[in-house]
Every structure is written in structure tokens, then in C-alpha cells.
Image (cartoon, rainbow over all chains, first blue to last red; front, top):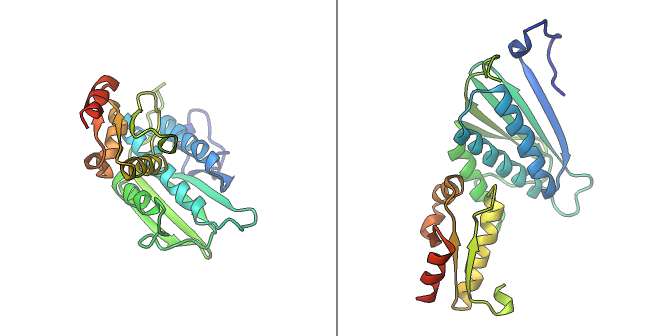
Length: 153
Length: 79
């Protein structure tokens, strides 16, 4: 589902700005791969990125989704994770939001791999911010890259 | 595997397509359990994308990583 402010004219597809895609999934570990693949498909087809950078993005999205899922307790009713894709001429942005009780990025729950995930995200993307989602946490991840050229495929 | 009595374990990651901190957590858990039982767990991996994850997390200093199962096996045989 790609939203745009107006319908693109002939040959204008890649000029649509902004374009966003929203994925709203249950907070279930079995769906992390789905989120990762949707984002990597968008990145591979819409942005100019090396395979290594694409791998970095996939791993960062995976870590963010895993942390979002773990931010919910076992008693949460209909816990969901929102993954959205945004793009501009010079960068892409992936936003992952949960509405769980969560934890501060600097103080992940004991015994979890959350701290490792946060560290990885910071290394893998060009910029990452954690913001409160009242309740919950939003992580915004940015990767600098140009749009894919229209005649690439 | 450790609870089944195995103490020297080779994990071949050759056909693993994706590894994140969840997968790393499982491997670290296996390594801890093996060492608790005076055993060892070593990895076989040649894929750059996976090796990169171990380097980024600095876990390449914790795990012994070999390019082939044969080399991993002979390293374990010497422990």
C-alpha cells in the first residue's frame, strides 16, 4: 500500500514524494522475517543500495522488530508492531513502533538480547533515534542513499 | 544437545541465510551450556555477511570460527 499525495502521471512513478508504506503486524517473532523482507524489497527496488548496505538494513529492522515484540509482556492484549517506510531524495527511513510498557534503550531487561540489538542498530544505520510512543517506544532508523534510477531494471 | 550428553559441538552455519541477535543469543546459550559441562561449541562459517555480525558484536572473540567442518572437528578433537 503506497500512499502518495497525488496520483503519479505517466513515467513519474519514482518522482512521488513522499511515499510511505505501513505494515501493522501482531507482535509475534514469527513475523519478524516478514517485516524484514518487506523493507528489504522496498529498499532493493526503490533505492540505490549495495548488497552489503541492504544486509545492514535487514539486520537493523530485524533487531528493532525483535525489541518491539519483547517490549510487550505476556499478558498484553492484541500487542502489535508498526513498521513504516518513508523516503526522500537522499535517504530512506524505517520507523518501528510498539505500545508495550517497554524499557529504556540504555536499560534493557536483564538476560535479553535487547542491548545487543540496540548496539547493532546504532552501528548498522547512518542515524537512529529512540522516542517515547506513549506508551511504548518508536525507533527511527535512517540510511543515506539515493533513489533508484528509473531505468535500472 | 548438551543435555543429551554431547559436550563437543560443531555448529555449521553454511546454509544459514540470516543471523540476528536472537540467533546469536541461541548460539551464546549453547556455548555457555557446553562450557558448563566442560565441553566446547565451535562454529563453521565462511559467509561474509554472517562473519560481519560476529565482528560487529565482538563475539568473534568468544567463538572459535572455522571455514570447514573438518577443521572445526580436528580443533575440537585437540581439546
